[in-house]
Amino acid sequence: MKKSRYYPFERNRYFYGKLLTVRDFESEQKYFNDKRRMMNRLLHGSGVLTGLQVVAVDEKSVSVEMGAAIDALGREIVVPSPMTMKLSMMDGFSNNQYAKNVYLCIAYDEKEKEPVHAVANSSVRSDEINDYNRVLESYRLFIREDAPDPASLPLATLSDQTIVLYQDKQVRVLQTTPRYVNPGQLFEMTLRFEKTLKAGRLSFQYELDAHRVEAINGTTIVFQEPQDAQESEYEMKVLLRADSTAAVKATVGVKAGTGALKLDDRQLELQAQSIGEISIVTEAVKERLMSDFVKQSLEASLEAPSEPCIYLAKICLIQVGPTYVIESVEQVPFGEYVYNTSVMYRLGQASQYREETSGQFVTKSKVKTLAPGQMPELNVKYNPLISELSFDLGIPAGGGSGIAGIVSGYVDIPIEPFTKIAVSPFGRAMKSFYSGEIVHGLGEGNVLIITSLEERSGDAFSDILSSGDRVYGGASEVFKGSEFEPDAPEVKIGTIAYPQKGTFRIGVKVQQSGEQGNVRVRWWAYSAEMAGVAQGSGASGDSLDEALSAMREAASAGSDTE
Image (cartoon, rainbow, N blue to C red; front, side, top):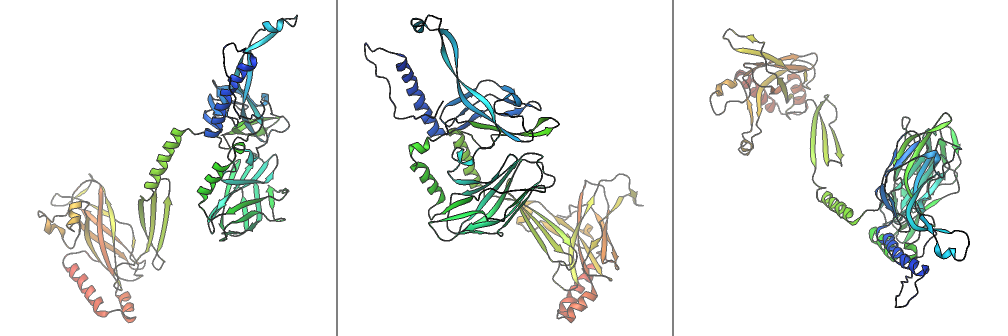
């Protein structure tokens, strides 16, 4: 069927005694068909409505599932049941080369059916004449081995411009830029690389030829296909900034003589120079695009190829011996879909919800101890899929109290329930648990270590009264039976220092068997040598004496020291 002109419309006018001929009945059908198809094209567009998935059923055959579509002339295409076909038996498939990408297409097709005897024709011809009583609105499936021109796809040029930098049977390189940008706006240029599988490792390097456009990361563009990749398509984003001058045209492309496109070690010759154009405008880009769309002529809105089709799948083939094997199938490779109003409404609601909740984040943090003398580290990661912010903080060891020669920290010692234990002469169950080596950050030499039992309450009411956190110094059993009794198991705390390594270890002896959990021990470490160095450089000697006195008082109260 050739390209249709849907207007102006004429319909039959009936009156008594009118002689109705074949022409009248055909014009009656054409009137309603053409009007419906014009509204299909203008209101809905063209593409897949539902279904029509393409599935590889074996190494050489594919199946097209049932579904419906609208072509570029507004005609409905319905596949009422799955159709399985061998690729080599389909129209358009050639046997000259098997390592390639082919495209499975569907197009509207009409078939005549129900042959009947034509009574009127028999009056003018002596032999028996048959005609067809029905026209079946059907479809045909065929293969195209060349990718379509990007400009021929529906609405392809509405918001973007895509130019072909290189194309042959194995490789195609496309450059896509927006049609409109605002002065000084940052925007992305997309390079798309399409290749056949097993064609070789693709690489592309060139100097950007840009006018009124600035490349943020330099004008040398380099793409290198990963060594372990097995893909037929790749995308690369190049960040650009528009000129501050409005109402001008910017251009971007490959500078002549600089392009180096290779498949493995084989050099591919770039074709004639192609340049993409970008308009720099002052009004909002969305408003300009909508203005272009609504102001286009009816002829432009209904423009379509004379034999339109829909690309249902890109099928990647590899050669195995004298034949081919289907490696992968990509559904609707050029995004030819039709979305009904209900779907668009739902998508709009989902988009609005995401915008409303875009400021709500889930945060996670992790703190690690660095070696003494290292610079603090802060790494922040954001996962947009789950709106999660992750903070990784690294703090050098020894960065504690703010008084020279004294550092502080804490350690969580895991406590496990126990059954086989040592029993004291008084019949009480006891078992010891130990921390790993702790770097105090005061360097080598003897240090004084003070320890205390620390509790953190998760009770909101205790937090309001500022009584949620407690540090027990000395013998915590003096509070047993009171409202200040610790929730942690009754423990004794000991320490071991390693002067030559600048580390120490904390051990706790549990007086009773309880549930699995942690015992948090707060520690302070004091070095007389470090304090003397700080005092000689200007630190207050009084404050050091006071701190040391306080630590000694805590030790005399019953805290374990080393």
